[in-house]
Amino acid sequence: MESTAAKQFLISRVIDEAEVEQVNLSEVEKKMLYFTEVSPSLPDIYEVNAEFERNYNSDEYEAKVVSLLKKALDRDRHESSSQEQTWKDALDALRKQDHYILVMVYCAFPEYRKSLVPTHRLRDYIVYIAIGIAVVFACIGIAVLSR
View 1 (cartoon, one colour):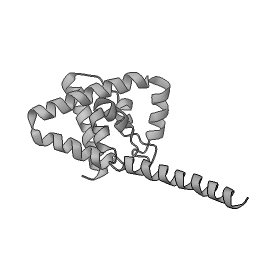
View 2 (view 1 turned 90 degrees about the horizontal axis):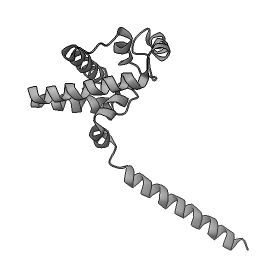
View 3 (view 1 turned 90 degrees about the vertical axis):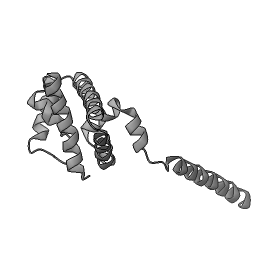
């Protein structure tokens, strides 16, 4: 799944669930689902963000979206097992990017964040530690030889 389609899928699920649950999402709140600092996704996203920062409580907004995400995934799981794969595909497509909606997705589904973390992270730490030890031994060797 392409990242734009993935993001649109998640946003549509939040908005659809808000309608089903009769939860009010203002236009600013809907547009904030598109927010990313990397590249503007909507022509007026920076103005929307400024208005959001002035007039909205981000903790309340995030809690609202987290709840909608949880309910949307539950509903999708209940309606079709293939929908869960669509969720996973969408998250996989977005995982290496910086999108505000992912903050709420990871709060709603911490298991997705864990499953999206690269599995080679432990290997990387071991390599860094080995390099650090080698540098220490090199420094000790140079100090001993220079006496």
